[in-house]
Image (tube, rainbow, N blue to C red):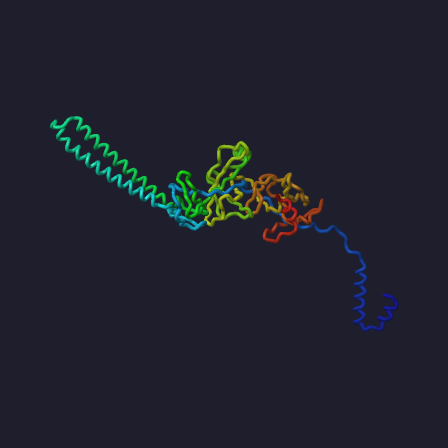
Length: 399
């Protein structure tokens, strides 16, 4: 203690002197240098590799097509009198859509019925004459020629009746065709003719279009090279075919997945010579009309099943134009880059087909803490925790 402080302390009370001594001791300790040593290893969130059996989907581009399409066309010639439907509405099979002027066809039907009545009268007369000639011919009271003529006249009268009946049926059909009905149930578009328009049976004037969209077809194009790879994988035992009942999930243009699951119907046997693609068709339920004919979608079709697949969060995979990689924590605690083979995605996770071994730890979170040559401390990744800036580099590189 300096001399002047000692002189002052001699005049202080005992309590004050003890406090001053403690402050001096604390000041002396603060003059010492902080302890030196390596910083602790940064924590990174990891997922432990656990292979499982998964259905591996293939994502293909496709176009939506209505399950049934009917072009409503004129089957008789005449003037359109009425349009009896609301454009864009749902119609039932047999519902009246247009009324074409029926007057000339009703007159033609009446004329055909009159011709049938006349033919019936002639047939009765010819049949009566033939019935009278039969006993006379047996008694040789008339010549053979007269009997043959009577027989021929009766047969011709019967043929005239058949012809007249066919004419009545034709006239009735034309009259019915003047009332245009919906051939199928579905949604009808805009009317292609208006009241007062002349439509022609010869040209089969199109009046409207009905499309059935409660269930739709989706037509995909798959490279023939992919099919060849699948067949080789099946032959080698690396994967198995899922059989004939293959599910199809539809991805819309905004990235959302349709709630309804479709079913693969067939894969064409013919390869397009210009594109090298094979047509694949699926049928998808569409109760709410989310899929419209002509819409571009993507389909996830599970065409194979793999035994040793791994699911990883998408942020764990760094994607570039050359390859796909992940960071694996080695036995020495240092992260290393590992190339992997992707096989599509499932519920926001990448399916890894090759490149990882059971028990390895793949970094999912904490990328910003990693420094070259520096060890890390792996901790189990919490999927429910908010994402950090660690996932930004992996997401930015996704393609």
